[in-house]
Image (cartoon, rainbow, N blue to C red; front, side, top):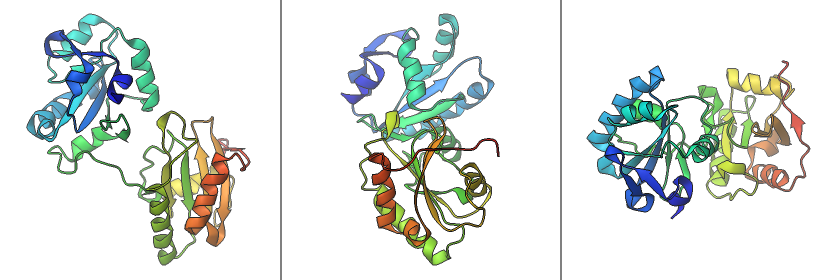
Length: 275
């Protein structure tokens, strides 16, 4: 069972009793990994919201949840967990706790990440989804295959290798075609160089501050032509230039950028953080 490999053989249930992970998570439609701690004020604010949403709707939809505690002692962990209606990773399993935090890119708490029954990441942004959609009408909150950085949401851009189509100078029709091409590739491509996340991110950059900043970091002209960039921020800020101009907007160009990256045919460059 993939979830056993992810979380270990045993979890804690209400009252602190040990339970087999396979038994605890059997039949889950998705599993929420709740990174939280009693000493964290935002956590103490979000936990009651999550409990209400879980009891009111999410549990009925088949969601199960596991606390990944960042508390520092047994007493704090036990007191905080005692009010939660879900499972918990044993506090002593600190190696797995740290590995989970790294895998899901947890840099601050609270963080609620969702995985499917196969252990594949659905989203690492479920905290925002619960706050926005407490009744779970859009559960399990699959993120869009392609995000436009012009909307100001970088998603998991910094957490995984990500293909970005800079297309500020393209026409509206060209942008629509480019987005459709990105969606087509994203829905079918099987990554071979994705690192611990096991997937790539796909982004448009049709304008706005994030697009401008990306051009600066990659030392590309502000008013330049469309350009495909393979960003690998987890690799100490690396990036790779793909096709540009009209080819950057087409499916063949997108596939070529990914193929060249995976075959190490593209030259690794370094983001210029001095800008």
